[in-house]
Amino acid sequence: MNELRRRTLLASVSAAAGSALAGCTDLFGDDMSETDDGTGEDSTQSGTAVETATQFVETLGNERFEQAHDRTAPDAQAQVAVGELEQIWLGYTAVGGEFREVAETTETVASGFDAVDVTMAFERSDHELQVLVTDEFDVAGITFNDSYERPGYVDRDAITEQEATLETEECPLDGTVTVPADADPDSVPGVVLVHDSGPADRNLGSVATRAFADLAEGLATEGVATFRYDKRTYACPQEIEPEDHTLDAATVDDALLAVDELRSVEAIDEDRIVVAGLGVGGLAVPRIVDRDGDLAGGVAMGAPARPFHDVVLAHVEHQATVGSHDWPAMTNMYEKQADEIDRVRDGDYDEDDVLLDFSGAFWESLAEYDALETARETDEPLYFLQGERDFQASLEDDFGVWQSELDDRSETSFDSYDGLNHLFMPVEGPGVAFEYRVRNNVDPQVVDDLTDWIEAV
Image (cartoon, rainbow, N blue to C red):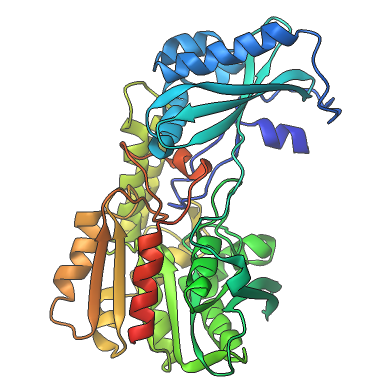
């Protein structure tokens, strides 16, 4: 698939992976010609293109999604559903709050179209959207155009970073060690950050969010070192055979290598290293702690306690039903994956089968892993965190289960956060995958609480 076509395909939600960062950045219009000259020159249809883009955004802002759909080009109408437009807009309002106005427009040329970069003012923050306009003044495509910004709690002068690489049989995994500036040898605690399911880079990053970078730099600002690394399924997915893709191979083994790498950093106090995992990475934390044997503790963030296939089904069902308008492609995905989940639940697969984007070997490894029992049997402190607006891991069905099942376990702590999503970023509304594409940062209270807990273990 050529670069332009890949960039302009419909954004998809990788619900099978349950990944916070799944999907493309650009939305609809896959029949664009490759004529972007990158000059940023004004188009010949200056005012009208801007008016078209402005009216389109204002129509979305007024929640007239059917009317906005009518303003798209015929090819685009065939590809994007009204319900998808609604969920795109819900992604912006989840982060920004109520739409206020179009604050600014800048016209350029992209993909052979007039391209209008629209700055949209919301109640809490401004955000960017690029609108492609045809010669007939229809909307050919839109692109999430936000860029990442460091959170205010990060002091770049207070931290230093160095590159490090985990050597595996399949491929090297590049990573970053972040430490407090001028730290003395053997003086600071350290954290290894462990990814959720699905491919992800070291920052757990999209164009506009970098949850692991926020955590790493925020913790280092407060005196805690971190190591984050590119996940194996991101760095070399082609090197992983389906029958070898287990929880250990995809998550646990590399986390243990990362712990050893962090131990070799001069500033680190080896007796105060913990692991912190998100989602499936959090589910794996008791196993990582148990297998290492010398960690000071573990942090599970937004970790499922239910069988993971039930989490996947609930996630896709939510995405298929959120909002007031239909999204047939998501409904079809739900129906298809419901059938695959039945096979997973019944154990009806071989190791090299692929169900819900994961191999049979992965599902078998999850079936054989009792995270709750492993947590009970480990002696190290464990800390469970949950965003109360998380539509992937459930406050009641996951976090609540960890709480009730580990209620009598010593050195076990729990915190939940009103208004935070799966990435522990502030949002409002019903929760949609598109919110992960809108500029946002990990909430500072999470960084503070992690720092306090780590320094106390």
